[in-house]
Image (cartoon, rainbow, N blue to C red):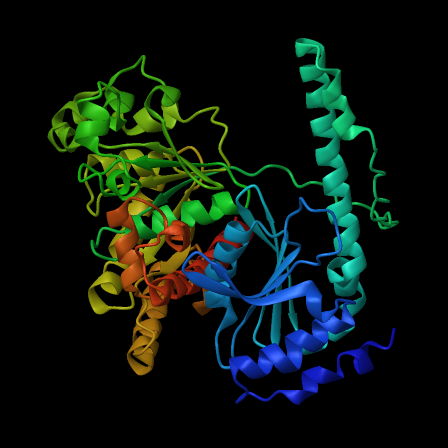
Length: 484
């Protein structure tokens, strides 16, 4: 297969090409190169109130099947990463197995199963050319027919077994005549076994992280929620502990401290801290949004009245630390109030690391030295070190480049001046979470930002903005894991 000649049609587009150009000059030639005929796909297919650009659905196969491939086309100047929600929506509605999102220069492949959209690969024109043999094997018509034939055979076997049970139960032997003609299974798609040595699984790491800044309004709680949700998307088990009497984290995940906790006769963080017999599992609430699952220990306003009781409790600083022994989570995030009160000390004493969120603004940056000082005082009473994992930037205004540069220099200066014998890292710019209305709107709706793509009340620009924030959060989550 001469891939360079086969994909020469990619040279026919320019950055000024339209979406229609990409459809006719890239997608149609690509489908022909994959072995499909003109009748094997439909364009502008209605899915509810929307239309998918291409639905690849060859008619010359068995009747009961799922569409194999949907293709969503964007113009070259469009940021395709902000349209992942859109192709995910099309794949859910059509129940297609595979998806392709492209603007002619970038190609994103997806797999869809049981409500989950999974990224397979991202290619540029050059990397698509280099890997086209692999892409061809996945997307070509022969593979499509084999997969759908295998799925049909599997479905046939289920029906045959069900008909047999009905026949035995009701004495209706005519049932089995429906299946007299057996369907031969398609040959399975061959998979080459790798001769490369398999990587050794890394030892499971576990971290209890307090997300801590005594300056309010820096997006601390929202960052905590969305970072936790991102880590669950990466396969991590995450617990969130709300130890702020305002309970913003609890309400931001759809837990009402009055209706869902107090009036329901359930327990919260106050019971965990002040009742010796109350265990961690007694106060955990489980929330699920698709493939995101978060366990939460909610808070309650009564916590604000318990400062004196906490102070008088024996070994109060280690109350939470004792309750978090032998947990089964990869990450536990503690969300304390923006202050230096008793519960903050309890949070820090229970932690194995500190993440400092901040804004590129004078007052939040100025507060960093007080946060660092507080961590060092608590560390003196701990049996093990309390590392500051880094400084994460949230509510980042991308329009103010010169101001941001000045604030970044000020921030680095404060970190250097107060680091003493530790290195405190400012997380890289590609992890900075932008200031977006959609980020603030999601906690009001009671879900993490990853759920925005499923909210039909949001506009397309809002969902695109959410997708850009999700990409930043993924980089932040991966960077945090690398630091750990």
